[in-house]
Length: 526
Image (cartoon, rainbow, N blue to C red; front, side):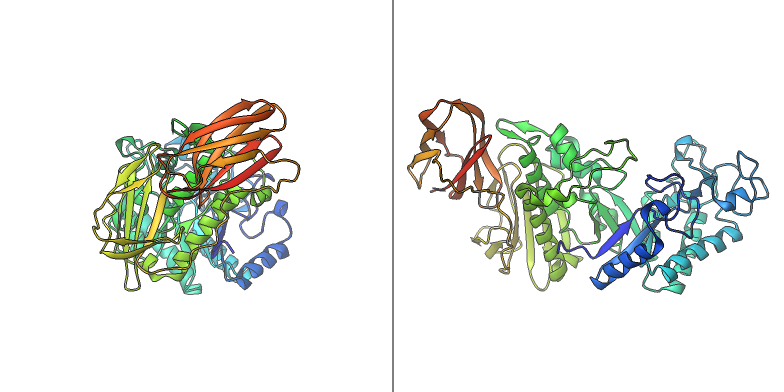
């Protein structure tokens, strides 16, 4: 229902210990016992296939740990011996941070036969649809010294080894998906992408800065999410804002988000709104994208919660939170666009995302798309540079606008984003994020005037008990456009006045809340 068409599992083959990320493998032909019986894994894969979803598994063939029988057969108790046909005695990386377990010798014909057997086994017995190979920069056998501590420089021998492995996989299953966590020099990644492999595209830092509202010195420039901006010919970049290895964007927002006046990204609701903002400039970019688990709900536990490799809470209850459900619905609507309209697979697109006001254009035979967003914490104006004059339609709001001047400035509130198409689409049914509680015992808002209003709004509140109350205004998408810090009201009638002069004309929801009560009314600004 979200729109996902592939699921990637972190390593599931037997690894040392019980609870782990799985990057310390020992036995390659058995699912880890801690996760459950092998038939349950097969049933899971069958269930995914029945729903039209591919299943990919993370395979670690750069190294394995001491329990591996391939290590133990030629092992001196400390390292593999020189006679070991599968492993190097010493690591090829002199950088200790790039050394894990025992280092495979991928030049060895014995190692090549072993990895071909491993890959074939999982495709044949478990019917997996492909692999994500961990740290493929380590597949070469050339020494990586202090001048190249992470092995990122071009390595022709490594490229040949990876192409050989991919050919063997495709010989057995021509449709298999081969993904590399490579993160090497661009020329090497481009060559491997042109060969048909998909490359891991880490954009966590730039999307994180954009979500938090920090745009200085190009920090929030996420143009690298585009394979075209890397000079590639094929859309073989799997871009991601989050992964198991990166800090969660929502955690960054609530911990370090920027602010200006009442607009504070560290506020949970505001932080979730920012996730919708970055999502609109992420899923719409042509090429495959990866969602980290619960990213569509604004998962906000740090990667270091319970230790970096420790288990994190599974929060299915997030679906019951209407603000988080709003983000889910936004992501689902974006994935629906991707799947149903060819323009999101076009090669004719461009991003202008170096500043705080960002835009993106996609051009296709079916329709054109113009996306604009304000990543700042203050109101700003942007030249949308619409592709042509005429009617354009706001995807999320269902509004239409006749464009006479394609360069007429659009004013956007902080965090505001719009997706315009030149063909009218069905407006997605999105939870507005506004929770209205039926009132039976009392009405907090005794009267509200004038409504509609051109500026000021006046309220008389009927406060049942002295206490603290918060006050917010939301637009029709559920985005909070105004809020006040809690203020104390005395029991009885109280007067409240607010200036809405800066809000655009339209329908809004005014909400006042106490610790145990919420009341919402509609207001119109004209």
